[in-house]
Length: 146
Image (cartoon, rainbow, N blue to C red; front, top):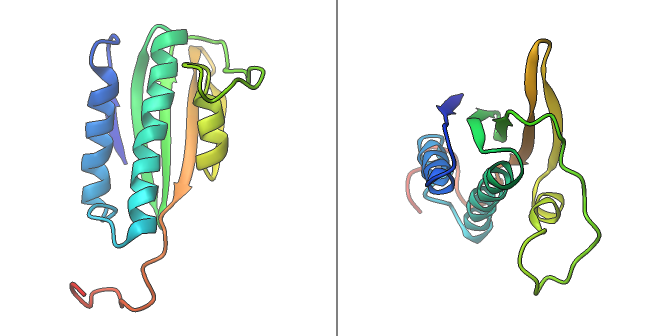
């Protein structure tokens, strides 16, 4: 598990992307082992950007980014101080800026949702989960570079 405490909105999206990329490298997702794995890493970084940006735009900024990794699954959690949970908006043209964050999560995350922080705490956590792509079948774990 990795935890990044956050304060404010300036530079926070890039900081969270860098933090996530470093964790993915430590957990063996980077460097990717093929095109599918590369797309998955890019998807994770995009989703982190979207969730953190939403916290900046609609909740006064994120307070914390938590990454949990186990058994090839990654869970990303972004906590903020707003009790308002995100709501899907009416579909918009993909060519128009803004309003696409939840559609990105719907499309790329294995699962996602929101939950209240818990008793006595104001705010929410927006979370998403993705699984790591399988290793290519021609490469055994621990076999070294192909």
